[in-house]
Image (cartoon, rainbow, N blue to C red; front, top):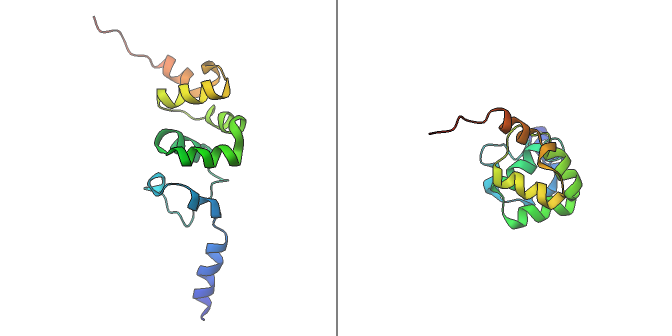
Amino acid sequence: MGSSSRHREDKRDFIDPSINSFSKNLFWDVNQLSFNPNNNKQWLFRRVIEYGTLNDWRVIFKRYGIIKIAEELKQVRSLEPRALNFIARLSNTPLEEFKCYKRRLLSSKHWIY
């Protein structure tokens, strides 16, 4: 085997094997070979809570726990209202602690008469 073949094998060794546990549709815009769930937790948690399946949720819940998931999601700038309410209720965290909730209040629309 040539060195370029060995280099590709080495690159595969660095991929977190748990990425295979997630639905493929979560990574439609991401290179799965270079994606590292540990370096992109906020992105992964947001993607799972907004677009994932029940199995995807179970994977992150089992691996990280509700406290870690909620702590990371508190920092995201936007989150669908349904997803925000889900994580807030599940983690018993007030909505006001989420950055995306505060941001939504600041940018509320005018009433239509």
